[in-house]
Amino acid sequence: DTGVSQNPRHKITKRGQNVTFRCDPISEHNRLYWYRQTLGQGPEFLTYFQNEAQLEKSRLLSDRFSAERPKGSFSTLEIQRTEQGDSAMYLCASSLLASFSGNTIYFGEGSWLTVV
Amino acid sequence: GESVGLHLPTLSVQEGDNSIINCAYSNSASDYFIWYKQESGKGPQFIIDIRSNMDKRQGQRVTVLLNKTVKHLSLQIAATQPGDSAVYFCAEIPAGGTSYGKLTFGQGTILTVHP
Image 1 (cartoon, rainbow over the protein chains, first blue to last red):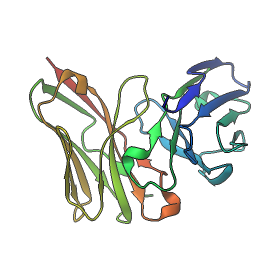
Image 2: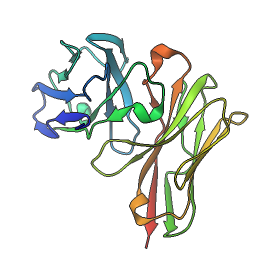
Image 3: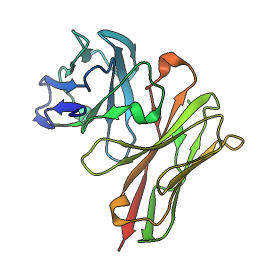
Image 4: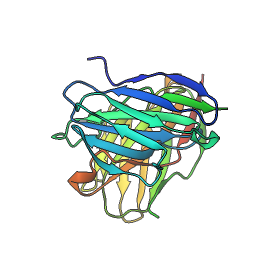
């Protein structure tokens, strides 16, 4: 069990560029979540998938953000036309639908985005 | 809107002391509460959780207390160690299975343990 894996861990990009982050959840976890965390704040929910279906999106997820989980395994989060306000850590988490316990929601190490 | 917040942004303790980290929440419909520890540059790590039908739960060196009357949650760490230094977040999950995993986090408390 390698845990939730996120790539890249760090990304520096110029404003206006597109970036894509990838998340590989724990195998057989059918739920996958994306959160955003800025310095000094707690993570904020962005969206989640159950298998390949995107079931909920936060109002924080503007039109420039798109998330996919095409085969119900890994997921990508793309940010188009990045802005400085997008600078944050993007966290991925996964869990099993059948479980309802805090210790079965596993977070990855996050992907840091810096927009310059 | 509904939120989960913390009373103290920072807490400094001596090694061996007990630590208490507090959290106030506003969503009375929340069904589940979790404490996470986050070390620098890492993702949140589960510490302990508690359901709304409980008022206390103990783990290894940690205890979570829930007071629904005043919407207050606390994390007690016994015999705090330097390795406990981190940011601690409380999080809640509202009632309803479809929202499971959609956590609402508080701002966080920075715990610093001095040797």
